[in-house]
Image (cartoon, rainbow, N blue to C red; front, side, top):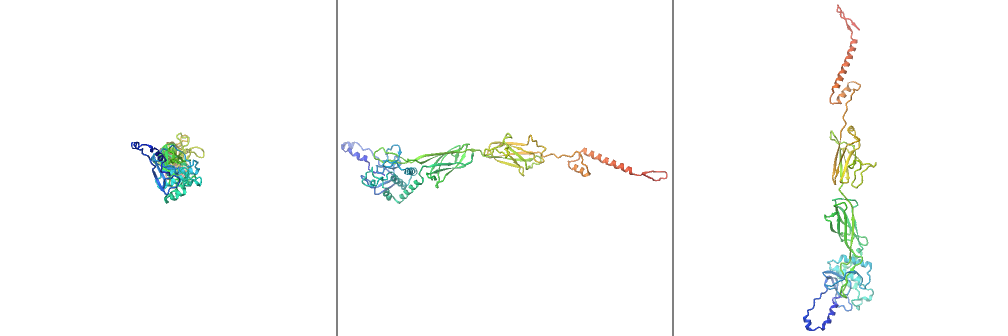
Length: 483
């Protein structure tokens, strides 16, 4: 807010001594005038000595195509082409330092509301700025006898003249500044575990106010390294309306994903620009922000793989249950490595051992990839001992690739049934058993059985002969038994 009567126009009247011919011959240069932006006019104007205005403007002015707010109450309003010097820390109209909380509130409001399109918010911002920068140091500074240099801003009087909607905006902006002023902090939360390359995982970005609570509606610029979000390496997210963290699904494209953030936050002290022209209002626009940055990084690994082992009978193709298998690296000595980077070892410190299930298979998941894996049989299962060589046990090797399952197969050769070389003592059933135990009698077996039959038969004949009575045949055909 400022007077609309430029002092420099009054000074121009000193040239009235010029001749009429000169006035006609020299056309006056066009003079820029103040231009209101958005806000409200309130009436009547606050009285002070020499004030020519009937109303006061509470809102923005347009200077150089930009909306600005005045902070030197009652000084001249800036023209649209007003020239301003670089910024300096904002002080009160009286040249005193702002209280830290007031400076923090102003910085917050300049950051959040100088781009408003609401007339109520623009008027509320102007009202609060004058209330904080031109508050009376003594009661007599509100007296109408003061000049524009010494008059203080009548906060209560101006508030009473605002429309109800603008009054509500004043309360809203004041409460917002109190709750959310700086200094702000930014917190990036990354996943607790290493990420999987090409697999998205949630990161969060939280912006907190001076009280440590989340701030809503904050635009945060993201830059990703070794990663993308929504398929891009850069993007902007906004914190949600509840002030909670913004969630970003980060997809690693390399082993060291990193998320860097940048945002505008309230400055420690607001910055004001001073006009080149004397007695013209100082102005503020975007001078309430500073850049806040942060970064977090993690590691990413390839997707885990797995190995599936099948233990199979060579003849039947059926799975063999209960077979112990040792899982090693390619050298068949060092243990394999899990997805967490740790070696897979048992309680004995040696490479871990797994056992096939009822179907003859076993699976080892969560293996680091890519990785060469070997599976080695620890001991032969019952019925397969003959083909097992402890010095060179059956094994199978292969490479586990990201997200894939390596299928390995170990084949066991069953024991060969054996035939007894001697016939056990006993009767016929033993012979029958020997015969059943093979696919058919061999030639040697038949010869042995034949000899046995002849031997038994010969012995029986000798016994019969000894016991048979002698038959003597004589002339009279007399029969006589002899022993």
